[in-house]
Image 1 (cartoon, helix red, strand yellow):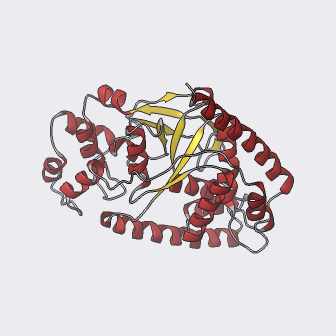
Image 2 (cartoon, rainbow, N blue to C red):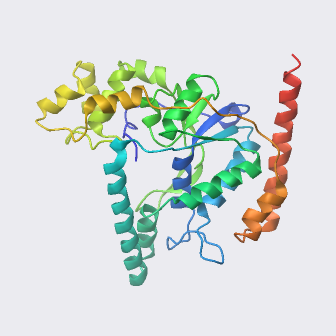
Length: 341
């Protein structure tokens, strides 16, 4: 879910042509969950191969990454590592929500309510260890680098942007800003027309750029106050203060009140250690041991994974492979040329 800051954070649309040649550190789990949620049949059934194995994540990863490379983007997928102890409660709650949604999906299917079935199915998306491993293998065959984070992928991506190894991080969640990413791109992997939940209305989804310092200046706060705001509202690691939304949290932050003071004023007790949670955003465990190289598309291995093992259309796969190989070869040639100057 991430911290809900969307209504107060200033954003600007950014065209894909302005991302050409940019290295973007993508929150892999966030993207894979999006693919699992969106790429489904009308009744909510995910894409599956002839053996009943879910393939929605592979379809989204392959075709969307191919499209990003076609636009000139240099993607880097960053995978979550061990979740912090503070996240255990939230993770358990999410597991229960997914299980309940799955049962509601089955009930809706039985009742013939396709609209409700699709809605509940999207909420039941589950990312397994096997899905993560095969996603990494697919990226390797595509010539796309991935990085294994020690902890939260968003924290690792933020570090990579801070140190110039990527131009921006990409995620639907605003937690990246709390982790200190100088630039955040939303809607990078889910652009196109999307149906509003519960309504027969479609909207256009386009990439948005958020620059951390501009956002902080606009709100009149610093990053530490932004972190306190996030904790007040609720993050992936805590529930937040009941009755506090983004606007109230901002007002408290601008008054100079800390999250501890607001908890006390609202006569509520935090379910986590607030100092530990604040420190998690400020000094998260990261790694600097990674190598970022694009290219060396392995067509036979891609065919084996997607066509032979998971029944994808070979013609369509080959077209995307050809475009991927051409674009990454051009990038590799340009990199070798640039090294002479």
